[in-house]
Length: 99
Length: 204
Image 1 (cartoon, each protein chain N blue to C red):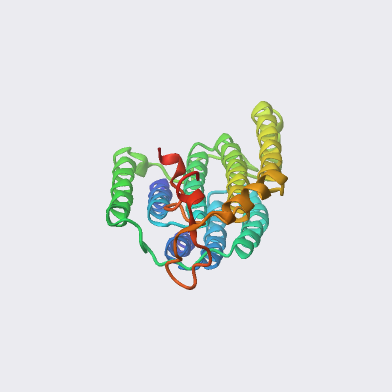
Image 2: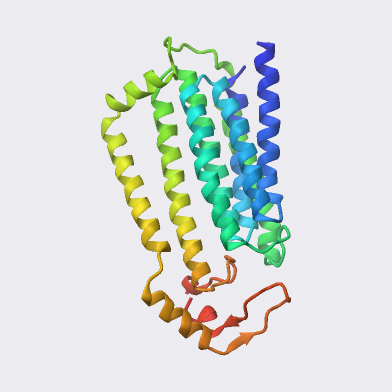
């Protein structure tokens, strides 16, 4: 099984996630699409780790999982705070930082 | 060998279907469930790449704990149902998928041009490669400093989430102030619960 198959799949999943980030308006779904992109990166990392027979890529993948968990926690905290403030849960409506 | 290829194709198809489900589902709740399917299929792929520990962590921590937290927040906030590209500006709705396609083509060209096709995933691996023991040894010997840094980051994120999401007086004052402002725009549909107020357009 060539490693290129795994990398192509990772590229495809990453592109799907990137498209989702651009197209969707609900910040919850945007966060989910970010997860898709991070997991595609993980797949590529593990593919390379297998290719070299080196565990460093697996440790890197673990670190990426931790970073994803941090990102989710902070993102969900912001969404809950927005809900408390009765702000619209919609990335198009929140344009205060656009300048 | 053949079994590995069949398993790869099956898991890849399920992972792709899950990814498209995340992007296309109208209800955020279904998006989260599609992501759980996607993550489990990815764990199968990780197993094929001899990353047993990462696959187990993926299922237990990611598809288990993180996604349950997600479901709680989705149930609490209750995002509105939304069509794909619904009311997005037409520019974004057309160029978003085009951009994603261009990104995939570019990455695929990079993979195809790199000569990686000659290498296969059967490559040399020490016995016990990817087992919890091997990963733990790496974490505590070669990568001790990154390991500690990541644990500190996790702590900081946890504290940050508590600070962000807690109730506090300042927020409630602001809430009362927002509610007292006159509505600028009436809700678009009866299902959109809240009118748009001046503070939303102006200050936030």
